[in-house]
Image (cartoon, rainbow, N blue to C red; front, top):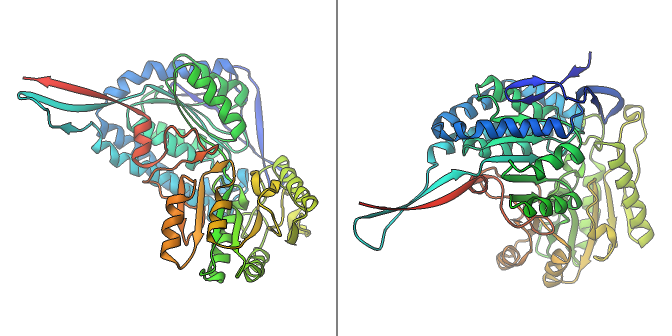
Length: 482
């Protein structure tokens, strides 16, 4: 029997006022329905915002360690459900069990982290210039936060928005992506079970055009945090800032790994392949460009092709790489492959859908490597969001760094080198919010800031770590004479 999920508004699990629902399906077997959700509209979103606004003051007055205790208990509940949620994430989004399990654990860790951070909240004390004056700051919550999250990390991204918002005394309304909302809803099941007061956290499923738009424009929403496509993100930013809201947007990427002539080529190929083909390339930090020194170019292409061809594709509960999340995502990737061939890139491996009984009607695409790519090709400039790697040849480190920066995005970038000077220059000069040395572009620590440059971000506020707390708080300076 198909699991049926409700919205969570003002402490109650309720149906949408539309009395309509939508279904999610398994991308490895699209005929299989996974779950049913509420097809909400503006009225449902408005009710959730009103509940959050009514609950926020009391939640803000709750001592921060008490808020942390609820987050800690919610994290423990999620940990107890890890196997169940791993399976649900795989069935809705298509990740392998190893990838899905890691993501669920990431959500658990985020809740534990911000639970402990509640003990450090409050502000700072400074020395006053004159006598008999205490000079200090007080951190206050922004108010009500509207959170809009994507399908590619359906529990980790909601967790890293929710946890700092709640820890700092804000009330929230979350709209998860329709493609894979199940594990996001599970966060609210855990919070409910952990004893979160009614109205403090609310989740409403449905279209971005209705639910999402309401969160962005509602007068009682004080802050908006959005992760998703650049096109939508820029509209969200414009709408929210026009209303004077605090806004952060995290958008796409076209992430390079520069491979220098001093690099260990075998290690470089493994680093690039892991960054390009992990989570089926459906990560905003995925490596989509390998920019390789001419002296090691041919060897690198050979080795990265070997890496790609060694990946076993199939359902996520058994194989190394799962399907793309939807038919439209698959078609988009295949379209880019055709464009790359038309532009003159050389297809080294992959480029199509795999054959075999285990694939059925699933949305599978082979790990794909193109060589002979110029940096002005569309495949080198536009986000593909699939397991497709463009390999670009450059004459020296200077040219590699220039190529890395010659895109409209700037999210994550890495260099593989044994030259310390090149590594230091790369870190300082690459135009990316995340810079890595001898590591893949994917994979982030939860206690340091995350965000991009250029069109990868609004460049306003970062997420995760202390930066997450900063976004959800406003600093008040106090001059206390005595």
